Length: 414
Ligand SMILES: *Cc1c(COP(=O)(O)O)cnc(C)c1O
Image (tube, rainbow, N blue to C red; front, side, top):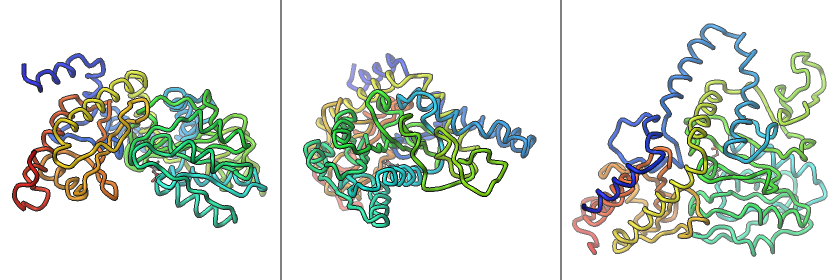
């Protein structure tokens, strides 16, 4: 039995192996970018087409009788299966960026005497930009704590940065570059000790790692649905507001948050509950794609998905150690599976050349993040163990040949 045959046996024994058949896969590339854009579930293609033809096409404006409930209903499903959030606290709406703005602004408005916001210097760009903009508009300070490039935001640094002037602490649960997994409970406890609220960005976490917003005492959260949740490009994002904070007020006074919306009265009076964070007309085909993506992954369950994800990333790291370290690669993700999310970052000085070259010449779809990271995201729902094996072999062969340098001849062969 050669080594690849042993890996095929892992796939044969994988309890989730049939889930792959539920996705549209008609290429021979190894797709390791499901942490950026998840694959298309077959059921989503069918249900969205049917919704467009039958619901929009035939029901026309009458469709709003049932479409109107989608943002809250899909939010409840998502909350129950993947966020650890009881009913009535999750809404599917807008983009992650817009939701982050709404919740951060609401938190600042609720604490007008507090003058600082804390995030980490390597948080996802949109988070840093939105918080910087809000800080400037409201005259508060944005404190950026230092981030370890492999292990993520440092709890000691956080402890030192938060004090009784802090209105809000905003972090990503899984760091987009390193995949470092934050300790949600510990961060919430630090913030709460000073009376600050927490706002979690779950974009790289939902559908990949178990999340317990209610139990871990999180205040607010946002995230996107097109990564591990497979809802498609530009599908609507979600927001979570803990039940105790339902008096918070969105800075966007949209008509979909209005009590007695169709009375169209002169004064904005937001509904009670999570609907007060709605803005305008929801994107119905996108909501249906979120619903189907969530249902499909929920049929597997986050426990088995996480278990397979850890096995995939363990194998990936093992293969990198064996085949790629001699070619200048270094693992830039925590090796302890309990401290990482669903992807693995590799550092290599030529990463910006390797990423495009492996895609075009080696049929491995990965992506590059500055300054020198190659990200490999083996989504548990549809990535096989042999895919991980093949990807590392292909990357090895390409980089060993020096092909990524533009055919400049042999590179560093171990
Ligand atoms: C992908 C991602 C986003 C995306 O935000 P959009 O508004 O959908 O563009 C935001 N935050 C994090 C941490 C992400 O990983």
